[in-house]
Image (cartoon, rainbow, N blue to C red):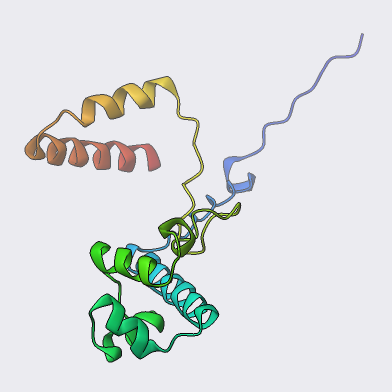
Length: 154
């Protein structure tokens, strides 16, 4: 009967673990706001041209200066909710259409939700407990976690 031989690979010859995947870049709130402003301006311009109106006509109907309305159409200005409502009424356009909410695909300005990560039950319990801590306790826990992580690397 042949004996089974096993070989130990020295630790210095084991390949290093692969690097973690880089986090998905998230769009900042500012970028999302700029995209929304641009989308609103484009929708307003398209509706205005379809209605055969000038920027001055629309500006007069909604009660703003022509220059202000021009900045809005170029996506340089985010209208307030009351102004958005007046624009929709003046251009005979629904707010859903103006915000691209009636489209089957998500609007260009909407940030996609982050992918759902499956966390271990122990991690979920830990996070529930951490959320109940005050700032001093969180600072202490953070120091402890940093120390534990450093000890695990040694």
